[in-house]
Length: 292
Ligand code: URA
Figure 1 (tube, rainbow, N blue to C red):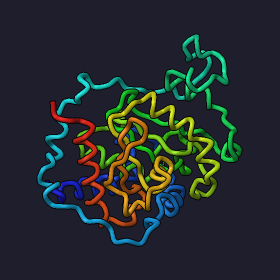
Figure 2 (figure 1 turned 45 degrees about the vertical axis):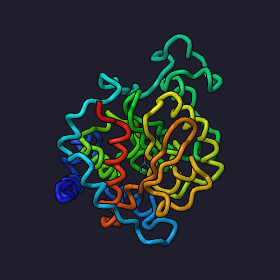
Figure 3 (figure 1 turned 90 degrees about the vertical axis):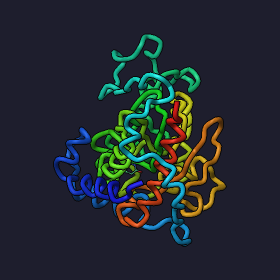
Figure 4 (figure 1 turned 180 degrees about the vertical axis):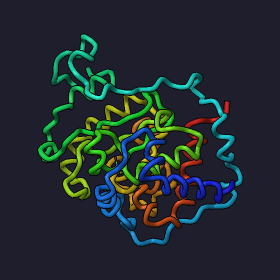
């Protein structure tokens, strides 16, 4: 595995953040002040526990395919799954007839579109009062890989899309290094509304959003879930130790397998952790796209 290539690629992504890099991701340029604000507080600059960063094992790197090979591998689910670009604003008119009504029981919400519509005006917790836009999630409707972050930041709150700031560009860079795009995977957060000042979501806010996240997982039925940082790790596995200890250790969540890794915001401040995180990404790819 050529780590230099990955680091070079990530450096290029980061260097283009303010203009072409962001356009490459098909998202509007980030507000630098908001991005800096976000990077300072999300995914915490250091993991919650103080243990040294775990180091990758070289043999794992050797066994993994190179980024170039990954792009040409077919997905094990046959055809590339359909894209799932939700309408920018889901309206009654855009819904199939059976969803034309609000307040449906979760089990009745049998599509992502219906789920998103049902919660479009959610005020179940205090974040509803301060958000600009509810950030539901984006990507492919039957994704081999599902990424779960912490919660929207300022840029996400403005655009209504997850991971569109600096951390998002790094996440997209890692996904691209696997030969995938944001449209090949699904990206969402534990909480769907921005915590004011980008603070860590509080337990009642996480609990309020939990039914949405669980239904997303059920409907998307990913081959592998990758949690980014401590908040989604603890949301899916409350007994887990901190991310420093747990990263790279898979666990079961219902019938799904979860692989915890570092939050991209943490990587932005601790580039030394990128190689370890990259090991997790490659492993995630191998498990989500087994060779056919
Ligand atoms: N952007 C998100 O959507 N989620 C995070 O956890 C961080 C940035």
